[in-house]
Image (cartoon, rainbow, N blue to C red; front, side, top):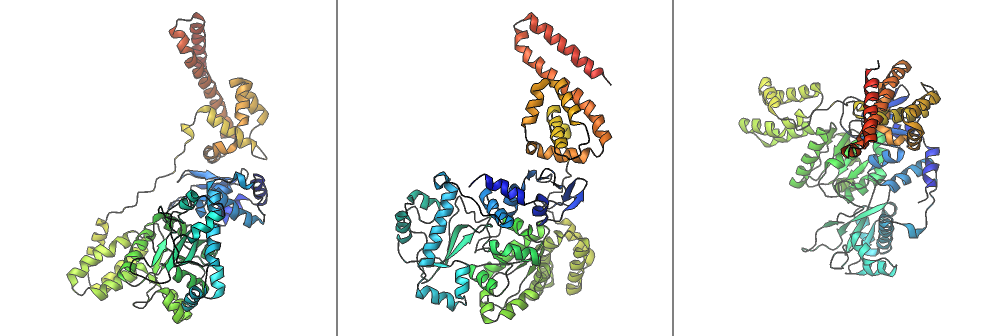
Length: 549
């Protein structure tokens, strides 16, 4: 992909606009600040510089430009971030010579070929099956659904005919170590990354048998990590941001039918366990989530795990209560309005668990144990004391248990969250040369510098000669990203900066002289008279500098 793509995108897009579409930014002097989108912090430590077009997050130690930010937020690689930003900028990307493609590029191309192959193999029986499940032809095309024939090597042979090496087909997870196709006799659902590139497949068996699982997912590959990717996120992310909540379902059928029904902020776990990485990705889009899993025991456990992860990250978690034996796909096919009503009537996860226990456990003593074990941990994760009081009051009202006893039990529950650490300044840890270099690049990036740049350069020459100045000039501002934001926060006024520069230049001279002394030590050990004299001279100069006020 041409390097000119990067420059064209940067010319079209401003970092404040890009990041501001993900998080709420507030003006802070020359910069903007916000609560970190990467951690669950209370005090803003995330800074954006419109002048340098860079960001830095002190709570997670992440920083960079618009590409770095989109990579982190969307969970994609550099090329994925470029694709997302190019679409936003209205730019058609220029591609390099295919011979220069790396392995990831070849894998993306291979997965696209496999998707097209499966689509071309949709036959009358597989289409009838999908239509029988309520999926329209339009939806089949929109989601690129396909069919993998009931053949051991049909995909492999097709890809080999396209000059794709067998080793690469294995790395993509499309064939097994035995050489047989991974997916056979299955409806195929391509799994896309956040930028809309195919990275894996999920297959639903068309003719069920006792030997094959109902659903089968691609193995983890260079492109696909099931602990990171959510099915449908590439299509749902805009709606999640707009509606400010997500709907999490379990399977592909549930998701596709939910989108078809107009609930386009739906995402799916693809039958895998929800992870912290999944929750972090969802929370970056919205702090509110409605979870809907099957009403069986496995579904209950999945909802339980998701709720724990969601609440512990500070999200508002609600749950959809479906009729016994029904999943979202069943309900949608029965009536779209019933699915909409179910979502509308979703309840906070803690209310859901309280009601479940009140219905299931009749013995008072056992009920107390169950509430302490299964409800209070969730209440403990709530950040609002008012919310905690609300749920404690509800337990008291419904059970008659003493309120002080509930609060005592609540206090005993150990929080697994680590206390938030305050962002600390790293200025004192930088060498004098690093700090002065950062200040030099900071002032050079400003339209109206706080100090005279020519005087600054003169001071650098006096301290370390022309060589030092040229060395500092050759470095880029991005090398000092973290220090630059610290410096901007620290030096609020011209007077403070000018006063500190006097001390910094003095420390820089001492630093340079001390390094020269270190370089002389091997010669002194050989009793070189010239080296000894020079060492003594440098020592006197350092003492004189230290005595200066």
